[in-house]
Image 1 (tube, rainbow, N blue to C red):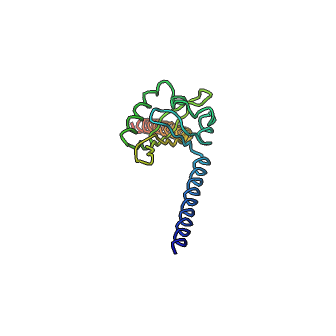
Image 2: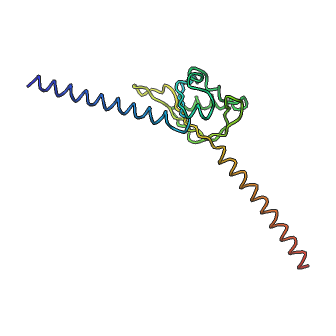
Image 3: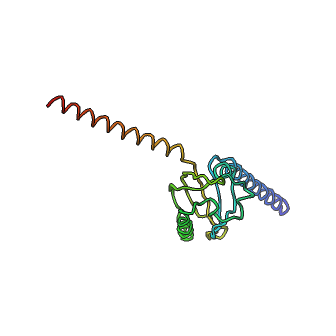
Length: 169
């Protein structure tokens, strides 16, 4: 009976372990295949992981980025953002969707939307952060085009009112 119980226990432990491995592999595949940039960093701002989406967005391969400071992709005029982000993360805060600008490997600037979440270790302590960045250049361009069209329409309506007023007078 004891041997049967031990065998069943070991069998259930193995199944649980396999489920954990499968879940971890699935999560890794989801992150790696995401179109969004998914990057993790330590609390001192060093890049710890870098997915294919990050390579596509920023131009650096994982080998080039991992181990480098996060400032690798931050333009000089935005460097003040990183200490503020790290400070909030250390306090356990999540930074929800903010728009900013980052720099591609070729030097071009990229409009992005970013969410930053604290990453906790097995003891529940904050050990780093995950960042999910999405390219919003197309949305920004569409919004600017719409703004320009609205200004043009406003201008034309004003001209029509001026013309109508002149005709009435």
